[in-house]
Length: 295
Image 1 (cartoon, rainbow, N blue to C red):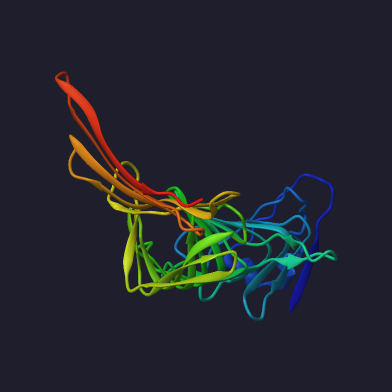
Image 2: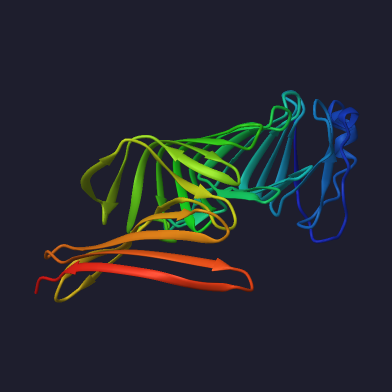
């Protein structure tokens, strides 16, 4: 039997236990919720699940499923999920979330997932509370100073994620103006992003230079890794890619930054810079550049 709970304008809450879910008559007597209401349930799930909605909540007693519409919100231990639509299958601990498009084809209520300090936006996702594994589509997440997009993303119980058809960029636009296209990748939390065959795409134009494999640093503080370029245009030199290169942190006393600039009208520049320091004794830097300018 399916029971629907319209939300009214009075402050109240409803608590649905596993026994309540199996007794539809009892559930109906507990319907006193509004947009600030909160419901709790636990069955086949280790901890309490807290869920709410600004529109309506449907209890499907036969399938043991709870469906929330409109600013739906689910909390489970350290996991927080917000979306326009969320369905929670109580018997197998699985949850599914998706957004919608309004009349102007603008995104509304697309899933926002948070697990401790990890977070991402997605077009849709499914997740199992007990196994801590999930699958998400259209993911966008910030990793250190970059943004990672994934067409298909697998979430593992150790918080590692695997990505198919991804993008890595420093551009914060939903459709970035430039990015490294990643066929497959693996994100190791607070360590690195490892990727397979990849290539640079600028304004949807692929650059014919394939990187067989590589990695980006993905942890706080100084770390070795690839430096993504800044993309732009100068009237005299054409389009440019500036400051692409690598960074090497040898120790707490010295590092090296090797970068290059390239302009489509033929100019280029390369630069090597190293910093060194010994506390209370000395510090300094060494900088060498070489350039070829074409006007």
